[in-house]
Length: 111
Image (cartoon, rainbow, N blue to C red):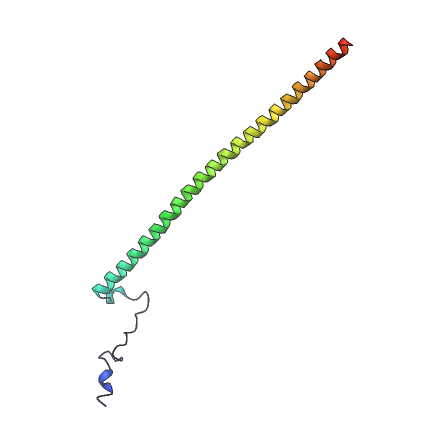
């Protein structure tokens, strides 16, 4: 019987077995200094990852806002150019009509 129990650790489990993990959100007062440090390091790493992700998202948002502003500027300039082309086309049509009328008048006077 002693050889059968030789593999049993003082905690009651088989040697080489890990102790059962503590439930998440357990009492922090029962943790050792090393466990507390490990938890703090893990939380710090998680916070650093979250900050990095936030910084990346903020930079991307800044780029997108700049692109959107540039696109709005280009759109406004394109609209202004379209309006200018329409005005010039209308003016050209008016002058072409006047030239045609004057040409017809002079042609009629010469005959």
